[in-house]
Image 1: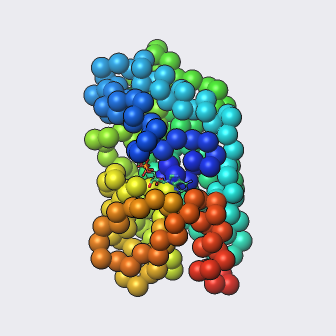
Image 2: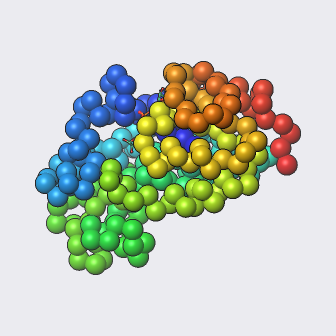
Length: 229
Ligand code: APR
């Protein structure tokens, strides 16, 4: 399970903590349905800017190591990130709980996949007046605060039968995503890769690898993972 910290070494910001995105932009204005209704242009530009950032960055060693684990393991990445760095590193099973910058959807029916479209370039934009196939304003395919998280069920299903659960670079502040931990089957080892302290709710034993994503995944592979399948 990954969060914003996974992409820090690629050059993206986290959301919370000093210099986080939510210091720079009021979260209510750019990441809620109410903010979008009040000022769609501002919200579209916020996500156009986030999308443009993808043009100038690339996956880091942490993303690459996770992708290469697929040679030996059945790996599902459940990410809260809306960037495309896991896919670009080669991960083949990625569940984006909070949506994807490289997709757009209908304002009227954001979760109707019939109206979801993929961008071909990170320089593509959504502007006021661009319409989805149902005739409503096109919007970013992003799950905003206060909206349902439709892929939560897929994430829960994906971890039903796992041998290890690894949390990388998330402060575990945002639900329901953070609640995924509660679905980890009893007895499965849980690893946390984060240079900072993270409050992990519940009584479960967690092995904290107190490093950044790249070094941390390497440490996990070297010290905790077995031979694979
Ligand atoms: N490697 C790994 N983790 C790091 C690194 C690094 N190099 N640098 C920072 N971190 C950690 C921080 O210590 C923190 O625990 O990344 C975490 C980032 O936390 P948040 O900024 O809260 O990001 P995240 O948990 O992904 O946020 C969840 O909040 O606003 C929403 O929708 C947004 O998906 C996002 C959700």
